[in-house]
Amino acid sequence: MPLVNPSAMLLAAREGKYCVGAFNMVDHLTLRAIIQAAEWKQAPVMIQTSSASVKDLGIPAIVAMTRQEAEDSPVPIALHLDHGTDPEVVRQAIREGYTAVMFDGSQYPFEENIARTRDVVQAAHAEGVAVEGEIGIVAGVEDDIVVRQDAAIYTTAEEAIEFQRRTGVDFLAAAIGTAHGFYRVEPRLDIDTLRQIAQAVPCPMVIHGGTGLPFEVVRQLVAAGGAKMNVSTQIKQTYIDSLYDYIQANRKQYNPIKLLTHARSALVEMIGQYMEVLGSAGKAGEGVSTSG
Ligand SMILES: [Zn+2]
Image (cartoon, rainbow, N blue to C red; front, side):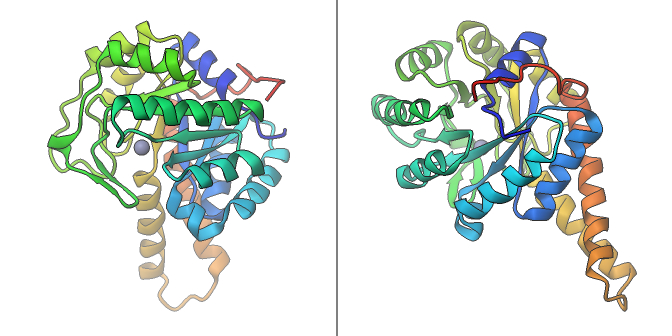
């Protein structure tokens, strides 16, 4: 089916108390692995690109390959820009066919974040594109954005309500102690705050930094109201480890398709496991918007 605006799938997830996985693609192989896992698990899915992937592949190529793969697939697939900080890149994504964008204005003071995010929401909604906003600061490394774990700012429910009301974002990421990359120290997760915010705001909540959390913790975050969870670092690790293992075991074999198929299978397995834990497995038929 055509790429969908993810608002309906995330609202259905919020309603049904499960979580849609948002997986970062870095190339055609990872894109196919994410979609293959979604078809295997009959799960709605969001494909994300970071600003590094946007720089590497270019928005037109990303849109073209994702559209093509989605058209051929029976499961609902959204294409989302992760951590858009450059307004020009965000506008290009909206113009060229992404069905959702994140505008990350979390490095700005609260009022400025609201003003900038509101501008993006107006431009995006005019094109039928959904918007994710972020308040508070998520720790870790996301491309060139580095935030120390002790410097991350936790969000309060009051801020989240005000931010959502004044910007009109369709879904919201709030700093509750999860971090990008691998956890160097045990994260201090504020699951109670997530629960309070999720109950207080009318939009679905997004959890960043899904990699490296024990599945039991992932389940708690979903139960507390996380409706979208981002998984990026785990994709990179599984991808590179599986290539490395295969090459080590088959050092004299020169068959790229066998090598890449091996990596893709490992990714499908890993992503499928996340879909089971997130509860999105079997939910492909829910919340498919016809207006997106
Ligand atoms: Zn993030």
